[in-house]
Image (cartoon, rainbow, N blue to C red; front, side, top):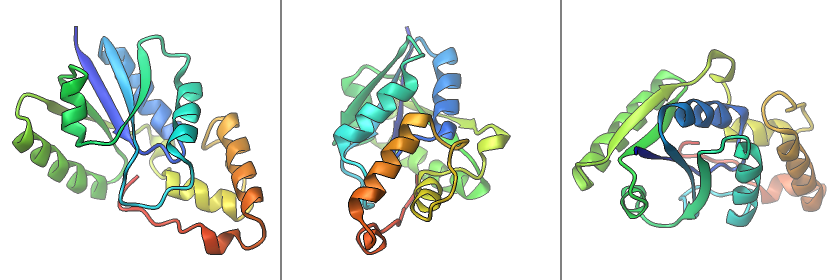
Length: 175
């Protein structure tokens, strides 16, 4: 039985994330969508909110579970008995970053491989940062994220009030 993890911050989960998870779930016996709890970038949603949104978005996939973690990704993979880490590639710059991460992870734990899936063309522009910025500015994100994420983003930005732009820094090392 092959277990894979799909690590990301999922802040929030997008249709691009769902596409990669769906395709990975068809390849591996078990897939764990791993919600990273301590990224260097600023987050809009708490770990609990990201877990809930990710669980709801992936509930149609019977061999997918969703967990949070706050250690090295390769250590989490080892703890869960995973042999593979799944990553999504959108554009050329993603390859450079993912290549560097894969080599670093391989140096740390040589028996866990990284598999990169190319994004579907319709999601090649999509990132969590883009979704947050479009939503914050009042744009339509209905075709970028599931309905429950659209609602969560609206609630979050309404809760921040008129000066929300000052409180939410949408800066990302990588989504």
